[in-house]
Length: 78
Image (cartoon, rainbow, N blue to C red; front, side, top):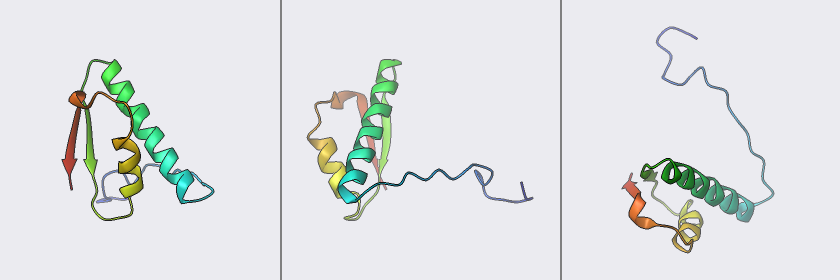
């Protein structure tokens, strides 16, 4: 790694090609819900930072409609 490189610069980029915006929404929602379930099953709270703008809105709508224990979530607004 180059000297003075930003943190994480040595990490690999992972591409996840998806068919369309709906597939992206579903995949993102599923990944977030899986991460939440994993954290909660381990006895922890699930913490997530929420980005602004309209791009992530469909994912937030899908999460809003999911049957989850919101009392175990901590949501931070960016």
